[in-house]
Structures are given as C-alpha cells and as structure tokens.
Amino acid sequence: MNAVATSTGAVTASRAVAAEICTDLRRGEFLDHSFERRIAPLDARDRRWTRELVYGMLRHRGWIDAILSDRVRGGLARLDPDVIDLLRLGVYQLTNMGSVPAYAAIAQTVELAKRRHGLGASKLVNAVLRRTDRERDELSVPVSSEPAEALAIRYSHPRWLIARWIERWGEQDTERLLALNNAEAPIVIRPFGIVREQLEAMLEEAGVHVAEAPYVSDSIAISGGITFTELGAFKKGLFFVQDPAATLVTEYAAIAPSTIVADLCAAPGGKSLELSKTAGTVIASDKSLGRLQRLLANERRLETTNVFPFVGDARHPAVAPVDAVLIDVPCTGTGTFRRHPDARWRLKISDLAVMSALQKTLIRAAAKVVKPGGLLVYSTCSLEPEENDEQVDSFLSENPDWILEAPPEGSVAPELLDGGRLRVLPQRHGTDGAFAARLRRVA
Image 1 (tube, rainbow, N blue to C red):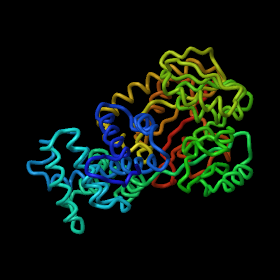
Image 2: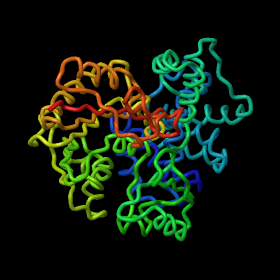
Image 3: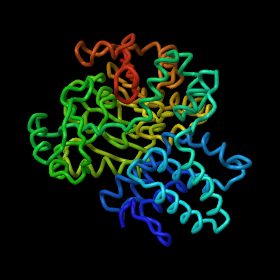
C-alpha cells in the first residue's frame, strides 16, 4: 500500500512507522537511528515519503504547536504526548504536503489515534484536524514584538538559543540560519579512489543530477530522488557521503603525508576516511561500537588498507604518542540542525555546561598522545563559543608548551579562517557549521 492510499479500516505502513519514530524520540533515541531501523520494511518510495513527513514535522514543530494550541480546548499540555505527536503529523500533512489529500491526512490520523488510544482520542483528533483543514487559508499565530520570540515560533527553534544567536550575529544573520536549518540538507559525496570527473560521468549515466559543493572542489552535490546506496558507484566503493564542513576540517588540519594519525572520536568515520587519503596510518577509535559500525561498513566497501578502527574511550586514549591527533569532540551539534531536526528539541541550556566539561577533559587527554613537535586538531560541529574558542583559549592558557598554528596557505578559503581557526557558518557559507583549531606541541 503506498503512502497516500487510504481506507477507513487501515493505516498506511508509512504513517504507522512515522508514529513509532515519534515514540522512539520521546524515549530519547536519536532520529537517524530510529529512522534507519523503522523504515527497513518500506519500499524506496515510502521511505522518501516517511522522511518528508517526520523530518518536515520536526522542522516546523514549534509553528504546528502554536496552531494546535489555539484549536485544542484546554491547551496541548492536557493531552497524552503520543496524541500530540499524531496531531503534529496530521497538521503537517494538511499544511505542508500538497501530495496528500485532506481526507486521507485526517482519516488516517484518526484511525491511528483510535488504534493507539481508543475512540475518545480519535474523536478529538478528528475535530481538531477538521477545524484546521477548514481554517487552513487563514491559519496564523500571534506575532510577538520580541524578536527572539517571534523567530522562535516562525522557524520552530528554542527561544533561548535564538536569543543567543541574535546577540552574536544580529537578527538578519540569525534569521538566515533558521531558514537554512528548516531546508532539506543536500547530499554531498566524496570521491574515493576515483577522480571527480569520472565519478560524475558514472552518476549522470545513472540518472543522478550532479552539482558543485561549496568550498570543496572535488566534492559533488547529488539529487534527483535517488537512493544513493543503490547506485553502482556506491556499491563499488567509489564514494562516501560527507558534508563540506566536515571535509573542510580535514583540509584545514593539513596532516603531513605518510604520518601516523589518531582520530579519537572517529564515528561515523568520514574524517578518518578523508585522512586516510594522505596519512600513512589512521588509528580510528570511538567508545560506541554501534556508531563505529558505519565506519566498519565503509572501510569494507571502500577497501581501505590503512584505517584501523577499535572501540576506545577518548578520555583515556589507548594509543602510543603519534604525529597527529584529531579530536572531533561530542558537542551540542548546533551547526547541523538542518540534518538533525530532532536535536533542537532535545537541547537544553544546561547541555552547554555539560558538553564543555566533557570537551575540556577530552582535549587534555588527546594532548597527552601527541609527540613533541606534533599536531593536535580540536574540532566541533557546534556554533557555540563555550565549545569552540573558549575551549581552545583555556587549553592554551594552561599549556604554555602548545601554540595555535594557522594552516599552510591555500589549505582552505581565507574567508573561512578567523585568527588562524576554522570557522564555518551555515548562514554565511552554505554548509553545515564547523569549528577547528590546529594546536602545535612545541618540540
């Protein structure tokens, strides 16, 4: 049954899966993990439809909640969290998915509510969605005169985070970032063992649309409703997927050829693979065996010979001193919200302090396994000063035998450098966000 088929007694598999993914998120599972696991039984078309629904709903959740709050007597807080998620999915289909007839969106969501919560819940869902459909041409939410509050509702981001961004970049830059976070992230691939032109020709022959990727000359942005894992070039190990921001971290690192490099927070492994193109040996460790699986799968597919993955805790690196260390630390991920729309709803202001404390431990531990004269590259996919500049400044002030070292000229575009540090901002550079600093241990 396809995603838009409907009947009073049946719920399409796509919608049932979407509801289960929402349950997983409430239990604390990450969207990517839940999505990959839940969509396994669906065909390619239904997987794309389910992705559009779930990821789209999460990107617009704040606005949807404002719409629902006006149409649920007594407010959303009185409803079961699962019923709220079903209403969100229903409203998103009505307001943002033109391919879905209103009757299908309503009937299917009502049936889901009936199955999961009984007749009473299904009647409430029916009434709310029918009213939303009737009023869809004049749907609006109160607009606050306070900029952070107004943007929080319009772009569905936490107000406290928007207030921080406005203070740092101003309203216009912040709004540009929010709009980008709500757009679908492009798929960007990195050629492996093949030159860009050859790979492009293979992809175009397979009906894939190819385009330039910002700032990284040999990366390729691909589109055209394809499932990249089904492409012959993927199966032959001729590319892996990586946003330009992550590639820029390795280009900024400018690791000397034939050296031994340790990537201490390696999963999912893209940076390790990138480093393996020039390094002699890449020791790739991560404390999560589950997250290392993607690196192991890519390593087999790409047939790399110089990457050595193992499970290890970066707080206690199980490696002898090496020429260079990359520590791409766990962070709040505020630079990758367009890829992980669930992250904005998980993030709490207290997480900044928690992450900062962990990062401080990790950078100190990583420094201990760098040889004298060697290089430590600290990086994040965060936009927040506490996780970026403040960590580097703190480390340098406590360790006089270390210096900040700018990359060799031409490693990355000059506009991406800020005082020798890499600073990639989505709203200015059109990629994910990234930060990195090259720290040299004085011999």
